[in-house]
Length: 490
Ligand code: ARE
Ligand code: CA
Image 1 (cartoon, rainbow, N blue to C red):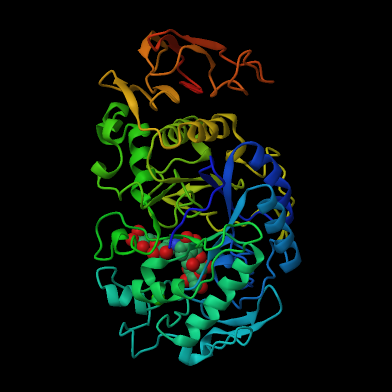
Image 2 (cartoon, protein in one colour):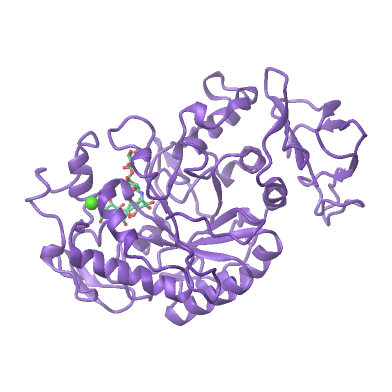
């Protein structure tokens, strides 16, 4: 299990949060051209439609059935997207929600199926009372998780009131694996598995064991789906991320938190401390980790992290530094977040607008148009997308040529494939660096749109060419202020 299916030479996924299938289908050409490996799409199943508050993003995390109608599009649009993107070598990972169905209440879902959570009735699947955990498995007073120190509660009680599926049931395993196999048949390459902390590893193992190999129209015979599991482990609970690594990759939430703290200089943290960043910081082994600077939860105060720690597009300068370091470093599989805008408003540590759904009206999503003020498209920011190319150029080449000033200036190479300098201090500096790069002339890809001289970009802010001499040395002036980084790669 867990074969990371990327086309050779690609490695980085992007989460196109709440994008419509038709828009993702169009975006895949751009993604292919810029070296992205895959797209994580929002949940594809029929979901609850919530009107109070109106149509929040999180309604997508309340399944009503495994039919394919949601505000991202229908089955035909989904299939067309998968096929177009696969043909371009950009693969699709589906956000799979299998721990639970909806919260309390009743209604009709996004594809016309009725449900009644109070009687645990989901005829669109169908699921009934016996398919859910009840008082036999969960003994808390209200049936909800009350204590994250009790693993039994965490797995058998309801997460924030969401009706908790019985993952040990053959029938439930059959329904969920049939749905996943349908998606695999369509050409999906992998799954983000939601809320895995709340499912028993043994149940997940049984579920994964039922999955088909990927569709041979696009993938070599025998290729397994790529699995990465959401488990928030900040180090203080009995259920640990490492309990799930034998099944596939696991989200490493400490990674984004640690980089946020370092770049914000929280608690005396400095860039120079990053020389051994990764496992020795108490994170998973890089070969088990799926990493990101922020995700759709912690950018708005859900999940784990905190506003004083996690960096997002709202703090663009620090965010670009964080992404550049993450993409230049060698640790984990990287997922870039691509957000929509909303009026974030933090009052007493809580974003009072944390629920707001994507741009659009009445629960209908607007077309994704990058940089129109509504869709942020971090994945298209030059400082991020050009670093995806750096990342690809350096794939498999270890970190080398580390340098730091003991403070917030660092530099490192990738064994002759790339070299980056980051200056998180207030003033520009200039010096000669041992880059490890072959002699030649390179463009700074943070500021220029191509990496081959003559360097150029439409904005005119390109910092031009840097010459590496026969001994790998280069004189580099590193700016301060916006984009205080220089990155060169073969
Ligand atoms: C919504 C409402 C609730 C309501 C519920 C049912 O907000 O008030 O009770 O519906 O009606 C998302 C949102 C939730 C939302 C849910 C369903 O974040 O607010 O509930 O969708 O619509 C824990 C889990 C982790 C989970 C985070 C958010 O362990 O798996 O909480 N993350 C995933 C997704 C979310 C999604 C779900 C799971 C549910 O990424 O987007 O929820 O499908 C400590 C613990 C963590 C814990 C964290 C927060 O850090 O260590 O394990 O994370 O606290 O409680
Ligand atoms: Ca559960």
